[in-house]
Length: 367
Ligand code: PHE
Image 1 (cartoon, rainbow, N blue to C red):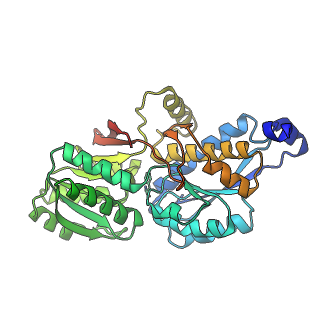
Image 2 (cartoon, rainbow, N blue to C red; image 1 turned 90 degrees about the horizontal axis):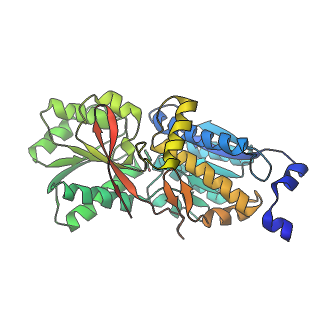
């Protein structure tokens, strides 16, 4: 009784130092490579730190990472393989909501806990009681963006939605609901699909509607192309977006086209708290670049899983599920993380702006 309550690592180490296998599904290549690479680096850094400190229950964590190549259909296949062949005790990932929505039913059916670091669409955790996320959800993010738009004095906003992404469709709905309920007007709704390259027809119609700003809850691959084409068409107003803008390549492709635009996100590398400064330094020492949101969320997701294994004193999936569900006040680099009864986290968002080729902190918005 006493032994199981304190769960002495030394005892477990003596019994076995077999690694604890943890699966990771990430878009390491393809259209969302920036998401997958960043979240993978953050996850890998956390695992390295955990193992350097003696592992969990006296055992090292072994991360088995599979690349879904940013392709639909892949996350389900990969998660099936991780569970049935590799026998992982839990799955970390994916970043994009549509991808997590493919992986989640497989984890749920097999009763293997899945923690998505970054998928914000509400449907993801609704798949079942084994599906968790450590980030906020889009009803909150949509309200954060709508409130910010109103604070900026924008009364007429156009929206441009990626109909291929559950994330984009959901965030548009949440934004529009809050914006119109508070007296704002949506003067034009336009759509595109992930992978599109020409946005001039939609932008021409948006220009004619004379909005004060354009809300584009897209991903980093299309948003800079949209902004550049908008500037060529003489559209000078700011763009507003969500966490999908995050990624170095957005800045590289956009040039100055997104200067003075804003988006909501999970993390700012300019945060001065000692926890974040330390994370930024260790991340830079290992990878060279600055950590972004997905890196920070990936790091927190692995740390939360390790803490849950420790708390459960076992890797048995049922006990592990309960321990993840009980996560409370985890002091993460993306903030204090407690999971609610729907397996979602309630956390502050940050508004960032783009200037001089970088993302800069504007404000923090509490839930
Ligand atoms: N929230 C996005 C989604 O659910 C993914 C994302 C998270 C992208 C964080 C960038 C940063 O699809």
